[in-house]
Image (cartoon, rainbow, N blue to C red):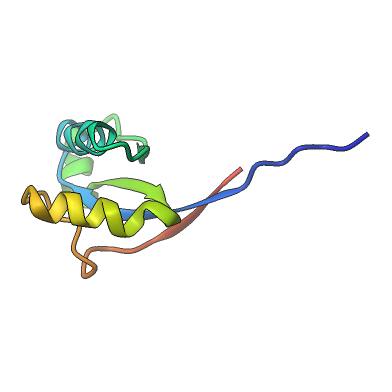
Length: 88
């Protein structure tokens, strides 16, 4: 019996100051055909403001996501915080 393990690597393309802003960015990327996830927002909005809410995309979508975000003035430059996370 074989097991299926789906491991995808993702990278944070932008860190938003609030969950609302991160959700806006996530929806914007989705409108451009790029699947994105956001880190779980804190139950304390002030913590989100200090730490930010990361928006991640699959590594293969990184360049396109950054292009879209930069074109719209929403950040996403390579100088942004870049974290690699492993889902799974």
